[in-house]
Image (cartoon, rainbow, N blue to C red; front, side, top):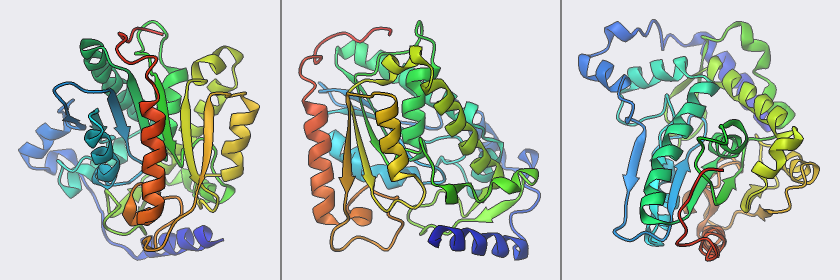
Length: 319
């Protein structure tokens, strides 16, 4: 009910908002128009001379990619290469209007292409240094990470050795669908209620949420096909808070059981003293989790990834 009230307030506020209005590509500065067409815009490398592994890191819906910096730094400190992905509509290299315009143009298929491009690039790096390849994703990024395993061609997709999924949006709570009736108004913008430190855009188009719904449905349909269950069942660590307001805690656990994902480990997260007053859905660092809880999550994450000694040193290939 808390989320329902928040969304209702957001919609009412939108009715009174005069911004954004009439954003058009040809009205943007030339530099920003060029940035919109830059295929490498959303990819940011942190590389080591001799990495222990190569990681693709993916943020959530309307989450500032910089909000993932604690996870990025954790992995870099553990001597891993990290390729951070800024999904279409989220890149900090874009000014507000350009980023919001790109966000309005985004679809789930475009976000899938963002991940495909990143994994392909990271896979080339992993093959070159003969190290394992990992996916780490939060919320929408968790959905896209799992979706990559079942939606990409087996002949062209890089082999993923392990995944870490934080609050993965593979099963949404009923209240997360409150915006679905607005599908007839896909260009309506809703003001973000997230703290400024976390949000990529002050506003989000209804179309972005509809794209998320499409992605959840598409992923679950593919995951339900028997031929895809073995592709999905790779060593994976799933972190969730039991009071997650957006993703269904019970739904994700049921998904794991229903699809017999015997290599997925599910870990319930509790926030500790000092955690910021943000949604329990957000579990991406000490600010959102609290220092003690973050130490526990980060240690479990590293233990899980570092336990991949059996594949360290092998050359990743195609699935």
